[in-house]
Length: 97
Figure (tube, one colour):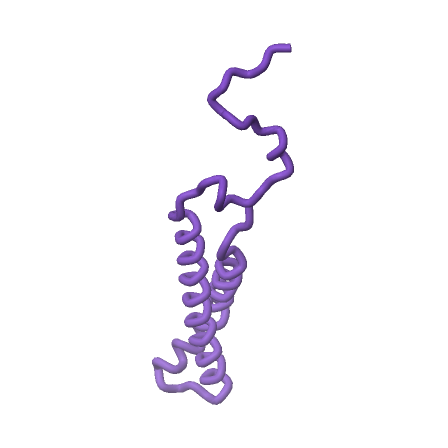
């Protein structure tokens, strides 16, 4: 079965992890008022990573929850290679040979 939203969650998590390394020092410099051009650029990059990470993570979790909340039936599930081995009536007693 295909998992929906997995790559969005992975990209969002990676962007949020990168935010932890990029954002703290420029944020302190910008907040204290002594930021140069490099610190301002890193601050903007950190904010972009934070926004994209939250966006990707939220969208991936939304897609995954939508997939998990949908009812499954034989018509909506993906076929597997063992479908030929399944009995027509799953409640019937197995054959004894």
